Image (cartoon, rainbow, N blue to C red; front, side, top):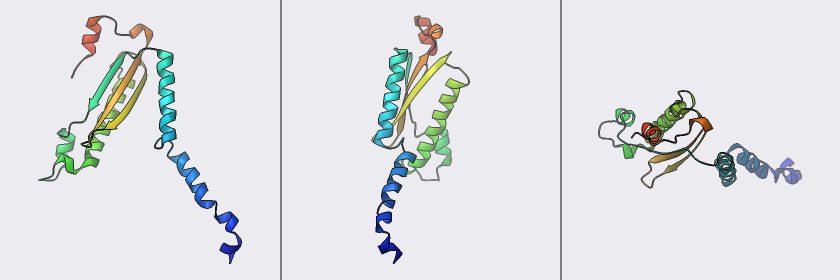
Length: 147
């Protein structure tokens, strides 16, 4: 009886849930991606030049991955394990940039994570350095490069 009498109230419940779901997952939807892209472009416009650009790729044979596999299992059988190991590596790189200052004085960093067709993640990382710490001489650039 209540359900038939209060249809005007009940018909908006799904809409309210959808609105809250968009707010909760803002970074996962198209609007959230657009907002992050615009934020990144504003940073690039302010700092003008990117000082360092890195591509970090996943290696399915990392010891962290191989150690967790069962006998007879291959890394391609465990995409969650590969994503977990990549997340650990990404967090380590970000920690080194922020706390250990491995790139001198990094002011801002921006990264994007993509997945290859094979399911392996990789990260593109842009780093902006403070004005007095920019890598201008070839020796400075060579000292910052490693594989």
